[in-house]
Image (cartoon, rainbow, N blue to C red; front, side, top):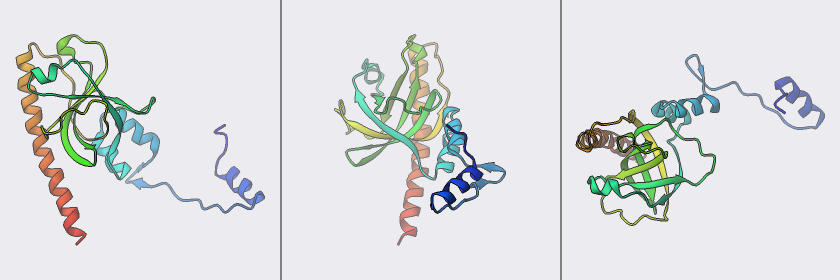
Length: 193
């Protein structure tokens, strides 16, 4: 019932002949790296920091479901995703640079997590536009999505044209980030040689 502490554990382990090693918290400067802190970072949109503290990329499995098809009409087709886990921790609403693993293939993209206010919708939607246009017909597939960086807040645009202009800027920004991440992967690969 969350009532124990380190002294309780020491006594319990001693009485039950259980080995116990108490380790100090992992620190980053003055801050303790903890699951609670990492969850707070994710929920508040500090994805890069959360990934640093995790030591890996924050992500989860999601199933591809059919959407409205609006992204395709805007020339930014998206895969609409529903997390596999019912109580999945989700990031702050906004636009993200992501990487998806689909049938063993890694593909970068940009993701909108929000309500699509430009279209006056009220359902919370997780949708990703993949940069590899060869990846089509994903309906029903289960993919792994990683959130690499938060790009911006979700915004209500005055017109569809303004939204498309912003999508072009977002894609350009994400493609710049993609090269940074690919370079990092190459550096990591070369160091292993």
